[in-house]
Image (cartoon, rainbow, N blue to C red):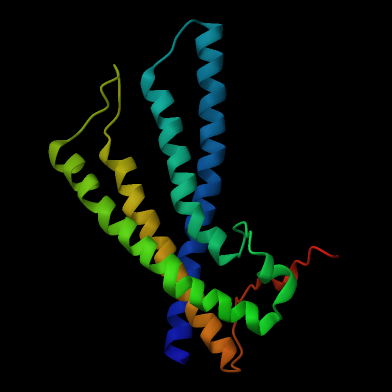
Length: 183
């Protein structure tokens, strides 16, 4: 278990860095949007490439930030049992089953299904059809990479929860039990 927790810490660190990169992508997208608007309305100059860069940065925010959000247990939950009926141990067991039965298979399938989509774009050197458009493969790479990062973070969360259930000290374990709707 010690080896698995070490790998878990490595995945957590990777997704922490990806989350920080996603934060910088938000700043870059805002700066580009502001500059693009000033140029368009101030001097009547615009370029489609700038709009596409904003879309690419937004895709990077979503696909690189999702695993970081999972690490922080920040995704929205709508499970009534989780927040009001189950005790902490029950919530951890529900997390384990949810990760194993739903999240991990879905993320692995999505990453696998997106890979050919990216490869075809890379091989064809696909470019946006808009005048001044950008290469498409970099943004398409974000899809399998993002889903793979989420799957890796899911495995990390699974390892931490199993270790917690075994009574071992688990660093970086964030449980949703810190939020109680009745408080």
